[in-house]
Length: 166
Image (spheres, rainbow, N blue to C red):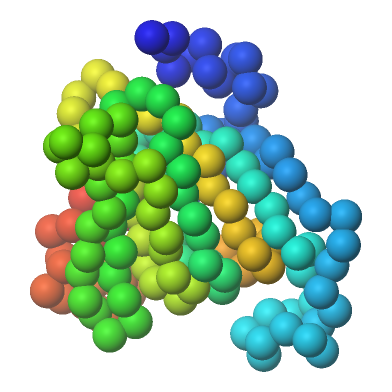
């Protein structure tokens, strides 16, 4: 199996503000005009976007939320846990990885408006995934969690929030 550094270099990945490394691989050539989008969007959005995303231990993807659903696709490496907090505070976890017999899936969906974060399940590992969104990603739709505010909203998840925020 190739190393995380191999994939970072081979795929031309760059640091992401939430942690990990990424590169946009697709942006639809057509867009949806603002009047035809839900009110939560300001401006037009491409039909769809896709990225590569790589996490390498001990890094994590910090809690953040998006205005569109995001589909995660597992490609290679070790398993990771994708932690979701619904707007009502319900915690759930999606396990992505290479082994369905261990409860891993190859895809997982994060609904729009959910806070979510990801971490690797084992030390000294990495995971390469892809993320697809429709309407497409725009940094205007990206909100990185503030630890104190997220704990205030969801005190029952304090330990996880402290572990997966910056």
